[in-house]
Length: 115
Image (cartoon, rainbow, N blue to C red; front, side, top):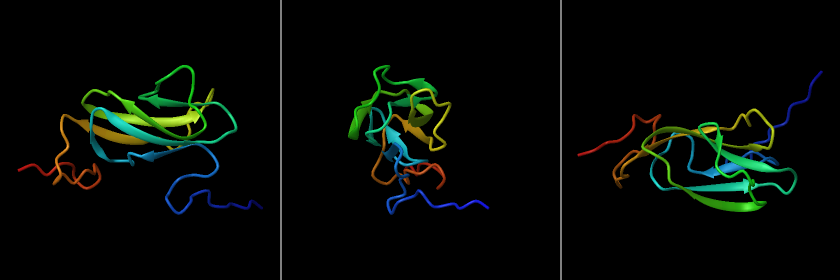
């Protein structure tokens, strides 16, 4: 018999592992992207964009904000412990040239609504 407990907090972030706080999965953003992370004190963590580490040194612990210059297109962001194949929490974002106030800013919602 296995006992499962939810690791999802009120904000939708996983506890106690590292988490991407923003952008959210499916967001449409403009480059450079501001990526907000929560990194636990235990372990060495890296942020990956499309499977490649952003910085070989790893991430500092605590709340971290990174600014990434990413080309236009669909990209996968993943924060995971060093040596792990994946975190199971990767998000997908669409990077567009611009982001307008009336955009739906959601891939799942059908993307951009441009005049």
